[in-house]
Length: 181
Image 1 (spheres, rainbow, N blue to C red):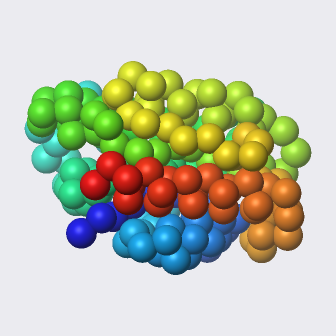
Image 2 (spheres, one colour; image 1 turned 45 degrees about the vertical axis):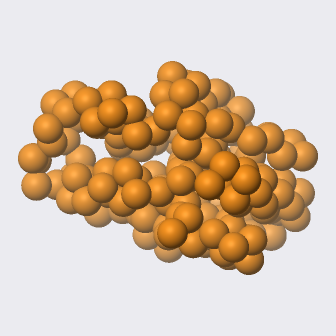
């Protein structure tokens, strides 16, 4: 089955980042592709490049979900002008696992989303984009940068332009997954 994994790097399991991804998942599913939001909240990820994993931190299960998917969207809240360190650790571990397991990320469709109160989204998007470019992934565009503004949980959903942008991005993800499958 065609599936997109939406990975949240937020420490808040019900915060703006997860809420935005849930809306993106709805759009993807409305376009005939299964979608699953996965959160890193509460995980104690080990910062290691060991491709075999085995850290019993729950991340190996997430990698297995990604291996079975056709798309991967990652989203991070912005703290101190950059994507969360835990998400960047996750992306590095996913990349290493892919390189050691037949490059399962190659030609997978995806892209990043950044959520913040005021600023830092574009630098965070650029930081996360390196993962997609390095791993030979297909990145669709949208009508603007994939950034959403909001501080308190629920505020990001009120950013009309930001939500319109990430929903169009999600449509484009589903469109490409359907075309490439």
